[in-house]
Amino acid sequence: MTRRRRDQRGAVTAELAMALPLLLAVTVGLVWLLSVGAAQVRTVDAARETARALARGDDTGAAVAAGEQVAPAGARVTVTTSGERVVATASAEVEGPGGLFSFLPSVTVHAQAVALAEDDP
Image 1 (cartoon, rainbow, N blue to C red):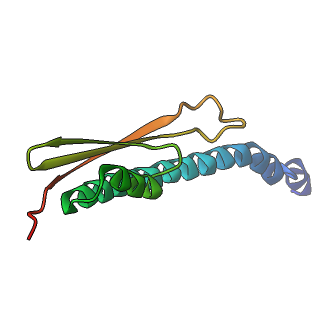
Image 2: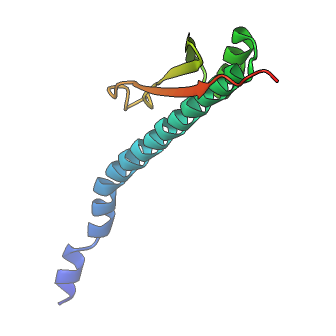
């Protein structure tokens, strides 16, 4: 009976050594997905902020600057107007986690917001 126990000594350590890299990879992947989700939310906020500022009658440059402050780093905010409609589009690229995970592609997040121009009192 004691011989059987000795044969299994270190089995838990070996199993942990095999599972630890997998757990680390899953953790890094989940953190990367979280950063993509956060970038998407910030991109939506940037488009919304830009459209809202333009609908209030702010200058286009000031509205785009306000949207870019909210957006993730390196984001592009564009504006089109058609009559009373103001359409703001924001897009940003989220890089992969890098390091051992440099094979993962970057992800581009997009958002579009539409607002109606407010009437001047």
